[in-house]
Image (cartoon, rainbow over all chains, first blue to last red; front, side, top):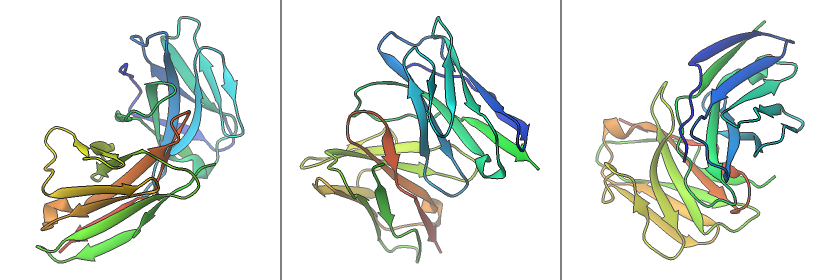
Length: 111
Length: 114
C-alpha cells in the first residue's frame, strides 16, 4: 500500500469547515483513498473513500486532486464531537487485506 | 452499516493470568479479521491476521505463543493474552471486512494487568 503523509495536528473552530490534507504521491491506479477517524478510547470509524472523483456523504466530503497525489477531507460544519485522530489510508478495493495505520492528524475542534 | 462487537470492553487481570477477548461480526460473515494493539498517544499497530479455519498470521515482532488467536467460525475470532504482564496493558482492537468496501472496527478492549 502507498504511504501517506498528514500533518500531526490541526485546530478548527466549532461551526467552521475542517479541511484535513493528505499527501499520497506514490498512489497507484487501482488504489483508493480511505479516511477513518478514531475518537478517544474508541475503535476507528469509517468516514469516506474515493478513487478519483470527489465524494460526499452525510459525514464528509473527499476532494482528490486530478493527479491523485493528494486529497482533502472536509468536515463542513465541525462540532466538538469531531475532535479525533483522522487517518488517511490508501488501499486496494475490493479488499480483504490488512490496514496499516500511520500517525494520522489529531484534530481539535475549539469552542 | 455492519457491526463488529468486542467483549469485554475493559478487563483487569493479575499478572501471570490469561485473558480472552472476543470479536464478533454481528450481521456479516468474515473469513478474515484483524487484531490491533494501541498504546497511549500512539497509532494502532497491527498484531495479526485471523483466518477462519486456519492459523493466524502474525506481524513481525508479535509473539504467537503469547497472543493466541482462534477463528473458529465466520463470525467469531478470539485473542487470548497468555501469562499477561503489566507491559501487555494496552487497548486491543479488532476489525473485519465484508471484503468489498470499508472495514469495520470493534469498540476496543482496554486491558490492564496489575
